[in-house]
Image 1 (cartoon, rainbow, N blue to C red):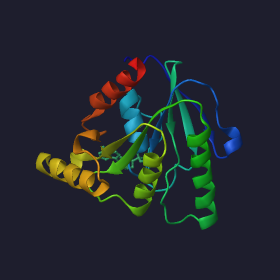
Image 2 (cartoon, rainbow, N blue to C red):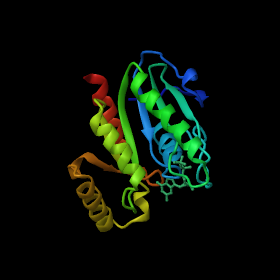
Image 3 (tube, helix red, strand yellow):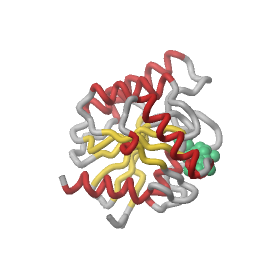
Image 4 (cartoon, helix red, strand yellow):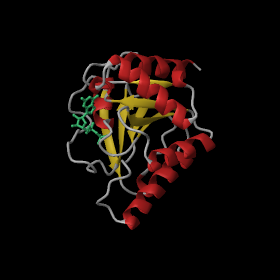
Amino acid sequence: MQVRSAVFVKSVADPSGLLKRPIPHFVFSGRSNVGKSSLLNCLLNRKGLAKTSRTPGKTRLLNYFLINDQFFFVDIPGYGFARVSKKEQEKWGRLIDTYLTDTPFIGSVFQLLDIRHDPTAQDRQMIEWLQQSDLSFRIILTKADKLSRNKIAQHRRNIAKSLGMDEGSLIATSSESGLGIREIWAFLNQAFEE
Ligand code: GDP
């Protein structure tokens, strides 16, 4: 698919602001600093569209991007940052839960994990939530350029095993080298054909 237009639509902090437009939503989820903004920019080939930051925990809102006036990419708030109160964590949890439960057409959820590390307890919680839902989802491993080819294969295998998932369903990516970007687009194109 050719990205003809990619427009930031809005940021939402509260369930009352969620968009109900019945076009496919493709969701990008993952803890803060995992590389969500970088991946979105890389997929869309737009450098500054989704902000990237070196400070964990800055992406606190659910952000909608409208692509080709046809579907949304939705960056959902990072979880698991230490300096946020429990009350605020719960508020984010409710926002994500309401969004994923009440949105008319979620095409798929991409759950991002840093390829270098074991999934955290919160990553696992999110993945379990997705497994129990009816939503289609894929695991995306980020920052693969930080590992050698051998290590990429090894870490992918270990992460798949620890999640009890099929290794082939995990996509290793790098926003630096572009690894895996075509595979994500192939998956998206297929989702449109179904
Ligand atoms: P977000 O908080 O999940 O949106 O994460 P960002 O996209 O802001 O990335 C967090 C940090 O990781 C930034 O310093 C990025 O430059 C870096 N980063 C993100 N993706 C990659 C990648 O594929 N390779 C490398 N080497 N660094 C990355």
